[in-house]
Image (spheres, rainbow, N blue to C red):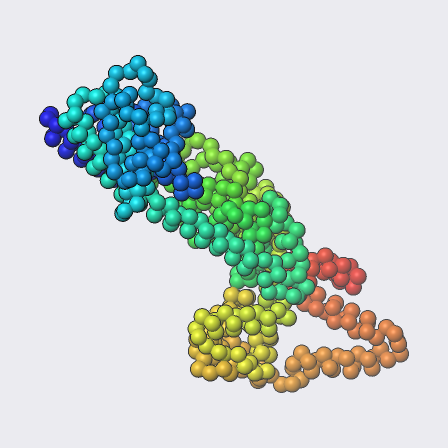
Length: 528
């Protein structure tokens, strides 16, 4: 192969190297290794300008020790390399022993060595010199030295493009890191406990509990009806914990088949099943160091319950189709709208898994049991969706507010949010009227208006107060306790009847704590 063919072949291979990788040191190492094989290079180094000190330092090399690389620092204008940086022009030295500007700072050129030529070419970004490439090789003749210098200049131009792309990628990476940190800060602020809307006693109990458990590693089980805000509470727990800077990975266990869910949670290796074309990490592995939110946990089938139990017990698992055990540090937050204790009793859910999940259980009240929060939620959703839609809906009539306060909200907060969003989208002014509400709520409003005044709760309460005081007229000082106790007794009996005697469901139905219900049952001598 003659010289021209050698140069063309070398430049083609270096072009492939630069196209394969953008990591600067790897590109330089591979390119210089190729040149050393083709041109008999002894040593080569990549030097870049340090913006902080305005020095030129060696960042990558072949044929040099780490100590020699550390010594390879120059001021701009100092020695041959410094002159290249200062002038932006190549320097070619046939014999380093005879050039006074050659400093031999790295100490790699001995006095008794034969003639060693030195070539140093600039790396430029426009008119600015940002670095240099230098190489040492035995002197052959002037023609060969000139040809080597020309080839190295072409290589330097190609590497300059890689450096420019590398610099732009680093800027973008830094921007994304800053943006990610800002987003995490926003999430932490958004999900602060005092930003969760709820001043009812039931919600205050929830907030007090998550405030205590957030800083721990304890597994949390969120219980409540669909739409009552379990995911919001899971986010609040994570973003107020020491794990806030790590991922919160969310998985809906009821949305995937058991086979897909296993791969989704634990990952798989290539060839584990039909369609597994490459290795894939699972959600548990992706959440390492952070938290994983497992929604609809009650839908897991028996084999998946066994695998999840092992993860909770041992903090380890294997990918599908693999035998290598992976250790993880993940906090589990699970949620379900099922009564898991009932599922355990019927054999649909493993008892040992239930107790592993139920380290800290948090019961989220349905919206109908925290009606005093409804006005605050309405205000929040009005502000949110007015801004999103460029509307100004806000004036709520007493009729509409009473309807929203008395409606049972089977879909809970999610249904209320959807109703407010619909009203804003359909509105053409500032007045919030009944006709802007969804059909099922409008039908409910008509039913309320169709009731006689004697059937209303207010009328019944008035009648109870009037007749009760007459009945107990002779028992001064006891009237309040007697009437209120009787109302409580009948309410609890009705709730127990509606919930088949299950106290936890009856307490949830009434919107009171389970312990409070147990005390009332005992105090009021209610037969279970």
